[in-house]
Picture (tube, rainbow, N blue to C red):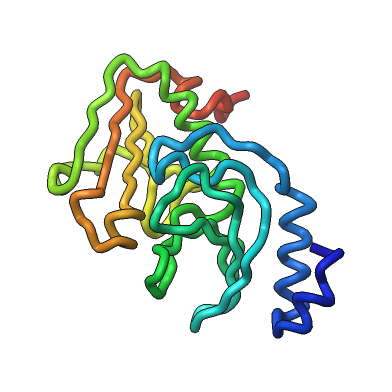
Length: 191
């Protein structure tokens, strides 16, 4: 990013945004990610690019998509990890931060120890009772959320449904029969 600072400035990109992109690049650039269970695998690796603005502020692309999808993965004005449907206005907060995206991938990996996986789609999500669950704070977004129960994890994926105005795209895998390690991605409160 620093090598291109002058080029960005000449195109009206604020210096503060270039600073954010540079800091983001130093921290995350080149980190290759495992495929995510939704969004056609999500970004392949993190690398900031393509700044743009809207009424909420300045955004930049989080990294290269794994496949051709009708959305892009963006980093928002407050550092939140976003998804922006291509050709549409507005952004959806998928994760509260880049670290939140990583944390959701770790949870996805640890859910492999589940004894049972139930996948709900579309209107089936309306019947989910989360009263005995707590939100997984590190990965709570506006569109996507994770919830932790006594022996299960629930992942609610609403990003594509909201962004593409396609309610049938809502998905909720419920991972049941997890042990303490699987519930807390290997990190327990007493560790």
